[in-house]
Amino acid sequence: MGYKVAVIGATGNVGREMLNTLAERAFPADEVVALASERSVGRELSYGENSVLTVKDLAKFDFTGIDIALSSPGAKISAVHSPRAAAAGCVVVDNTSHFRMDPDVPLVVPEVNPKAIAGYRKKGIIANPNCSTIQMVVALKPLHDLFRIKRVVVSTYQSVSGAGKEAMDELFNQTRSIYVNDPVQPQKFTKQIAFNVIPHIDVFLEDGSTKEEWKMVVETKKILDAGIEVQATCVRVPVFVGHSESLTIEFVKPVDEEAARAALRKAPGIVVVDHRANEGYVTPVEAAGEDAVYISRLRRDPTVKNGLALWCVSDNLRKGAALNAVQIAELLVRDYLKK
Image (cartoon, rainbow, N blue to C red; front, side, top):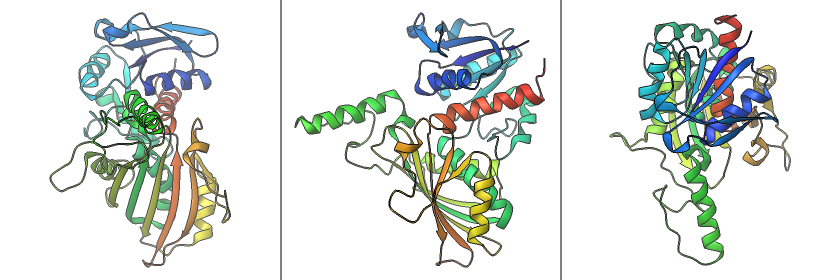
């Protein structure tokens, strides 16, 4: 007997990827329902190779009988409908920022803290972390287990797909405008994104950091270890899909580079591609459409006593969102919602 699954925000970048990932991984679903806003009702979405789903109205949908909902409609919408689904007995895996720092909602990356899933019983909701946090903590976990992390300095290079379809369209349209010598009109972004980088993701906070940077700090502490200090600078770059991160990590214990490389190679969800030669590293182009977190450029940091530096790349729509949510759902049905 299979499960009934709803995908909330099914017409968005992440929602469509959730449908693709459920089908690709043969999730044990007897029924999958695609939900979105009223304006998308009746739209048809592919599910697997031979199935088509017709979008239903989220606002009118009755979640009674639905076992799991994968939700990515935006924080304000999720704030209303995720608790409504949970009240109907559905376990919600929520990809928005709204519930992440709620102490009664587990924040989960399956390769890092799978046991935290058990906390879903408090509110019926499990939070999916921020995309940039997910790939970073996957990379950090095996190193933390070996050497105990003291401090992380991270600079991100985040693709426009993290800001939605409109952002992807803006990069495309601005690039075309520049080639035909038309004026560039920023709309989704604060400045021109084509042939440029923007050190500004989400709103600014009083201390000068942005909310995206704050998320990486507090989410890492909640998922991995409250004692880890994180300094983040988050940058939007003119890449369609795939986030990259430059990490400098300071450890409590003495670091052995080869032991670190071996631990990363063995860790679930990680692929190490680290050859000190031309093309011996992974870029977002190679990571797009793939499930792994890729590690390259691993090396000692000589500026601190126990330091390593590395390059980390992953598809933000897959491991950074849809895949992580589906992996959580897989653990739910394996360990908690058995039929």
